[in-house]
Length: 108
Image (cartoon, rainbow, N blue to C red; front, side):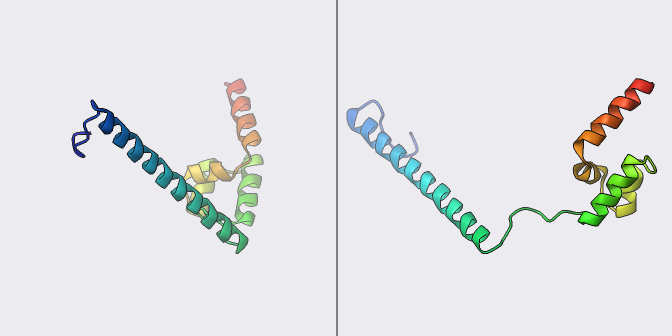
């Protein structure tokens, strides 16, 4: 604690250091509590946090159909909607992606 000039070798210095750490912990807990209260208040007003999905529900369903039917590759689906492949993978159901990967490995 050189910057604050607190000498932790002395009893008074250790006490001061302990009090400052308690105050810092209290401040952090107040920030967390206020943040949680704000998020709960926003949810009560109907607000939802996070980014909006890039694909609509209809687009995601179409992407799933194209992927399941193996009509188009993930890259082609991504190009169709103007999004990266990772976005398409995020909207696909996980079990179908894993199943097709396992099937493809079994054929090789």
